[in-house]
Length: 250
Ligand SMILES: Nc1ncnc2c1ncn2[C@@H]1O[C@H](COP(=O)(O)OP(=O)(O)OP(=O)(O)O)[C@@H](O)[C@H]1O
Image 1 (cartoon, rainbow, N blue to C red):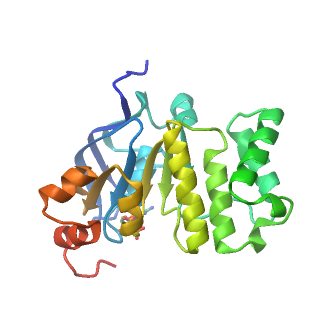
Image 2: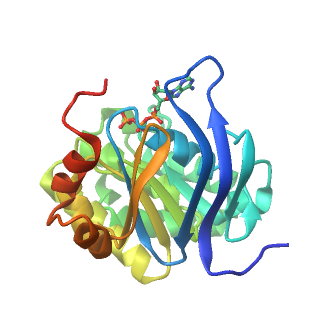
């Protein structure tokens, strides 16, 4: 039974290691994300952000400890899977299909009926300015249009929690604004956002709460203004350099 403690995500004493890879290992990790937050996860290349997101969404399973979404244990749990949407860094759609066909496929996979799929498709294509290309193969789209299709798939079933792994990478200013405006609208309607990005000035505008990860550890965490004040920095970029140094990581 789900525990209603106001938390969208609760990670308790979590341990994880890729077999044969010593570079990244999480051990005894604790992290709480409260419902309604716009939460940003930051760190250098290879710090373990995508790994942590994959653990939070049950794409990979922790070796020990517990991860719950709105009180539901992640992993092989249909209830937990219905609570969240995931917009991965790598495009998750079928290139040869149109936006309509992709949304039909992923909507059905998420358990929506035909009418719900049709209504939600029309709504999302309009919000994300994809109506004119609704029947064209996605593989021929610009980078910005592909990112918007990727986002539409992640929110098709109106999830309560939305995970986004670098949702604005490689897009122009117009698409960046369209995506961020839509994320803000979703959050205003109650969706908890959990996002990674290397665009720290963008994150300053979007996020209410942040965590920095490095080498499998959370090295700073909390309300964005409180974290900046505590570390005596004005920007996330200054804080990032201060916490993680200047050496290249990859
Ligand atoms: N499936 C896997 N098997 C083994 N090692 C992996 C696997 N996926 C990632 N890693 C390793 O885990 C470490 C963390 O990778 P991860 O992708 O989580 O970092 P990241 O913080 O998201 O990086 P980036 O900012 O570059 O996207 C890296 O050393 C990576 O090579």
